Amino acid sequence: MSGKVLVVGSLNMDLVVKTARHPKIGETILGGRFATFPGGKGANQAVAAARLGATVKMIGRVGKDAFGDELLNNAKKDGIDTSQVKFDDQEATGIALITVDEEGRNTIVVASGANFGLTSQDVHEASDSFNAADVLVTQLENPMESIEASINLAAKNGMRVVLNPAPAQQLDGNLLSKIDFLIPNEHEVLQVVGATDLESAIDQLFELGVKNLIITMGEKGVMAITSTNRLHVPAYHVKAIDTVAAGDAFVGAFSAGLAEGMSTETAIRFGNAAAAISVTRPGAQPSLPTRREVDLFIAKNQN
Image (cartoon, rainbow, N blue to C red; front, side, top):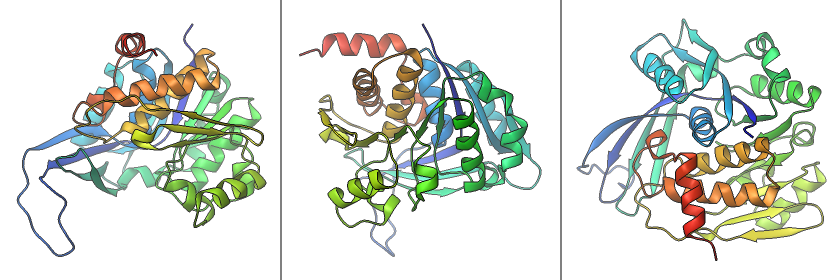
């Protein structure tokens, strides 16, 4: 049984350069292969969920340019409903400049463009979409007013809310208390509350009303925390060539699993498998696996 996922988020074109190592400040180095890939955290998570069987709709903005057209066409190919992705008259489509080294590690600079034109009015004009979905997925690559409007509408409609707080910034308790699953990585979790160590960050988040905290830690796996319990779910061991969109693969898969009716732990393992496959392939959306691939991967890697 597939579930329904609504994604409010960003759409970017990723401009990717392979390099032996990352340059130091002020240094110029020669890179290798250059490629463009459809990306943006919102679109990546939407594509990840759609390829894994969820019915997905997206709310966002792109520019009236070739990148915007390409991003929408790619989303439609994966069956995503883009009827609420608007064209921005003033701003270009968002882009991400990405450098990937020989170990698959990346650095990313984002020019948000049209993504920062998304308004709370845009969200409210799509309010019917919140009546028809099981899970809301959002991130922090759009203005806070649109993110807050989305979370408030989702809470009003009884949806489960998944927030991937990236790029990280401090969030207040009023917003955090409405989130069912907060999914930062181990660096973002500190920034969300301005903490200097993991344990104090965890304590502060639960004091602010977070219900479920899921911390992604790359090759170290995932830590799932509630106010009364902790669970560590190990990562699958694979050879990474490109970690771009690994976190998005996890969030999209986890959300698809939730919408489908999986338990939290099962959805985490499902997300881990999707992320593991994604890091063995280059690019953001091109690396995201299908449901068949994830099911086969889990079956082959069961303990």
